[in-house]
Image (tube, rainbow over all chains, first blue to last red; front, side):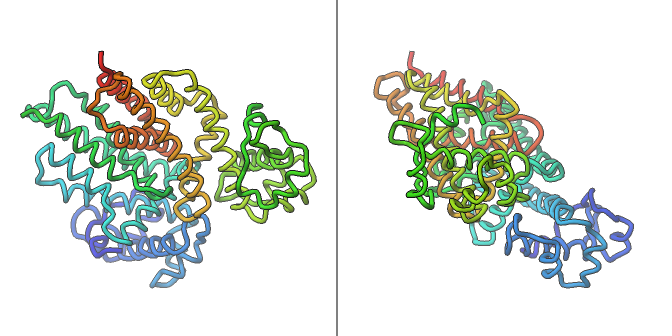
Length: 224
Length: 224
């Protein structure tokens, strides 16, 4: 897991025993804190998921990756899906912080372009493994309400990031006033999701075609 | 499983013991035949997947849904993933036959519109359960090459169906000659896949926005 993991951590609303967590030293000083133990448990979950995948994963395998006393892990989490639900919140916070960081200083058009490129670029084996892991867990969200709740939050935040950039562009007269920012954001985000899913679950990579099409579409939406 | 299942069955190239299969009565008279036993095993796999989901599924649970001697099932298939890989081929053939049937008599523009509506419409609980099942299995394709191979085949066939309709439309002067049928098909199919995945793995349904956007886009592509 990259070093940024320990810096950008937000509160996991589903931590089962927050009292126990907050008595430990925090890895951050602002309001979005996680205890060092929680972070180490999330890193162990990530390592175990990467090694075994979801279907074959057991809590014992996660405990094997944990660098502290195993009883601490069992004390904080009751089951595999408990650990994975917490991991999805953890990964979502990190991912959204990445998105905010890469688009922070951008104008509306550049924000959408950067976001598209960020989502469709697989720069390393680590990133590829991370995306595959998320896609496998997304498949499990059809039957696990806690996973579904996490994916809903990420979908809503990303779609809203695109929608607000499109709306700001229309307001500033950069984008064609005819576009519907809400539907356009829904379409773009669906295409990005579908391209990522197809890329990791089938041969032949559709991401380049989707990237080209979205950039071309944005070219046309920009008012000269 | 709907009654059409038994009618529209194509050869499963991965049947492990074709000799055993072909000695039994076939359910079809054309070249795409599956034995009655194979069909019953696929129906049992479907029923067990629907009841238990992939992660918790065992071969014994599939055998419990099988109406004939359990040893017949164990004779044909060695493992859970064996059964599911065969089921994915079976379901893909049925799905593509459905697509061919609904778009058979259509003009290029109508073919794309019908295909979009067919993919994004969930008419019954059975259809919803079937889509969820496929999305869960798609998540497993990140690590199971045989599943990946099945999804590649379906993706390629659907993308090609859209591409050829767009190309035919351009050729007949119905669609704007400026479009790139290949990239446009890639973008549309990615958006359809993403909308279906989001619909079943998160709250809030993006399918209507995607449907509206695609139909609006087709309106603009049509040359008056």
